[in-house]
Length: 175
Image (cartoon, rainbow, N blue to C red):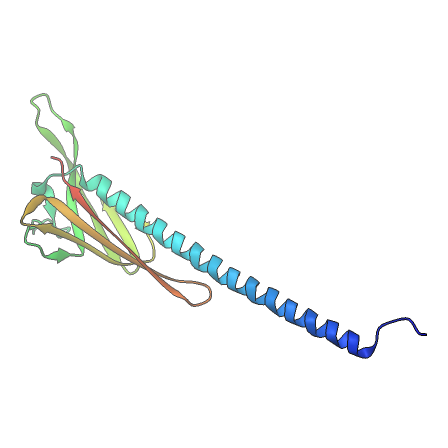
């Protein structure tokens, strides 16, 4: 009697090994796709939070009388419920001995340029966040000291999947 495997036995093992290898490949591929999507979504949400934090932290330090819808400071920001895509305001620099707020001589402006939120202060611009596709500011007549900020973001994963995220908040100006 000869020792070894028959051709049929080898073919059965090869078929079973192929099925197992294909299953491992599918699981690995699916896991990689999920990982890439999750990573891209986390990055997108971080960009949203970064923009929202920067804008809202500074906006809290202004006054409704120091809000404008343009960087030429010709149009005060109305509380009419209309959405605007940029905001300009002055920051307080402290309080004088009489208790009056000392306002900065330079204004801060936030605008959407392409897919970036741009912060301008004292003539200098810097990118606050990337992958942003919408930015809006609204003041409602019912709550005049509150500015509603809406930010939307979009990113395409390396595998071509498009992800969207949005963040909204209400900021009460303090001064």
